[in-house]
Length: 81
Image (cartoon, rainbow, N blue to C red; front, side, top):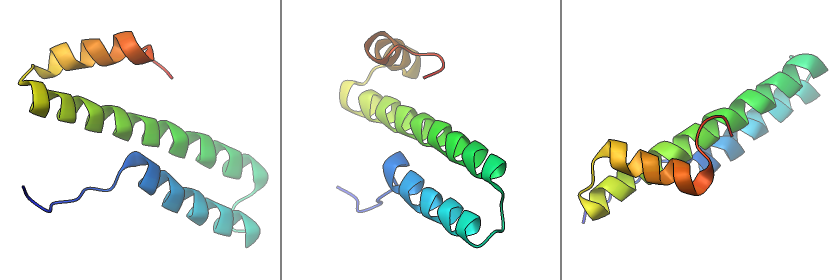
C-alpha cells in the first residue's frame, strides 16, 4: 500500500474557508464576495468528495467509472447538490 495521501474535500474546504474568513475579517473582500466565495468553495469540496468516492469505488470493485458514478448518483442524488 502506498502512502500517497491526497487531501480530502473536507480538508481542502476547511483550509479554504479559513482563508476566506481571514480575507473577510481583514477587509480584503466584502460581504457579497465572502458569501459567494463560501458557496463556491462548498460546491468545489462536494465535487472533490464525489470524485474521490467514484475513484475509490472503481478501485475496490473493478467497476467502470460510469457504473460507479451512476451508483453514486442513485445513492446521493447526483446532479447539483
